[in-house]
Length: 159
Length: 450
Image 1 (cartoon, rainbow over the protein chains, first blue to last red):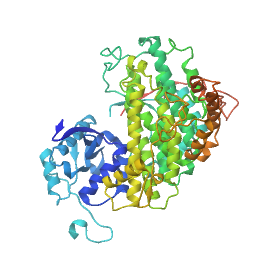
Image 2 (cartoon, rainbow over the protein chains, first blue to last red):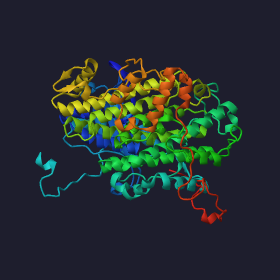
Image 3 (cartoon, rainbow over the protein chains, first blue to last red):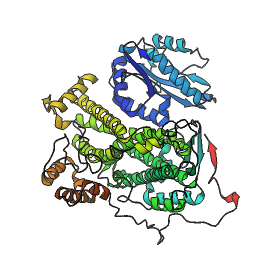
């Protein structure tokens, strides 16, 4: 697929993608945190690299979507695909790269016999929420709850 | 997952466990600590895994478009003999790497690194088990006078020094070798498994996807600790130095390049439909991937030294320092990792015995080349039996008493074949047991799907 200026390729995550994933995350969040991504990429590669597609344009990694297949958590017995991490380089946003990554995840989840896809989104992240609704996600009857162990305010309460 | 899991007939399964008790005693730690280091991940299974959703059509070679073969006798004698050699070599590498890892496993500074490598070793054991499944589940008598049992005995009897490929005949000098081996040599494994996914012999092709999924983690078990070491080195609190990593790379890279076979070879593999690339093409892709790995590690190091730099600036700086040999903000080429020239320290292939240095420079005398090797290889490795044999042979080549081709055939030297089981005076790993009633046989030979 030709994407504006270059050739788009979707492929599974590898250990050599860590540097670019760190760089994209740094551009999106302003935080350099290689240790976090080394740990997470190690985890996802062990679990199922095919469930974690990355997007390359002309050989440069410009987006990633990390997902995982699980069953039995939170009383949800059916096999579920969970989308957990997602990022597209700001220079490449608006070119349907997120959608292509999502389609790759869906294809893989069908092969793994997942019956539903789930994710959790920060309510303040309207762009991400809009993207997920655009690709087919709907509101879930499940609600995410949290309780700080030290009695302090939650991140949501602090903001 | 569309994977069928199978266990070997009991005598072979027990032979593998017998071998494990002698060569891989730390295996028993893995289930004890699995939940700590790999929480919520499926338990390790010592079994053969066959991918079920594979196309039945041959993808490359002379028989492209025909139906994939399922019996050795369908392949023809040449092709079946060739594939049998590949399977035996593959099995040898799996068991060989465990023997290498085990010697220095306990020296890991971090428990997490140790348990990652331990998992790698267990999965290599499974891969060897997978190859045994291919040997014993079909009749290879049309191309081998050895019975399956004899082939397995032979493989289980190999030790570091007597394996089929050179990379598996070198001892590790420290835990740095465990990690660099995973990053460099397992990467060759990834290429071989990827190429063999197309194999015209279906059971072999079916074996590849599950092995590849596991191999992806083996590479991570090399690269991620390397990244952390590079960061610590950049922060000045290193115990594992960039120089130590560099020297280990120079020890393993030449052996990795040779694992692809001679640069002019590989035609038969493609013609028989066993692989989709010839040796030189695959080796070039591998070399380029190693270049990327080293650039990533250098970027990690430079950003630890100069946090103000962006990822792109750090990578550009590292590339410039490597190219011009200069110095910027206290960082020089000597601080960074450098991919050795692909002709460096080679014993096989086009560049065998050519005395080429790490940056492509030529040496005209053995002594000057040995000085170069002394400066650039790990010191403990210089004192090894492998180096001693290499130097002896290099002198013979330089003196014209043996040809480069003859010298290449001398490596590795099969010095340690023996395979006496240390727990008895027997030389057998496989022990025939009296046939037991079916109810006592447990799961051996059973198949299940996951």
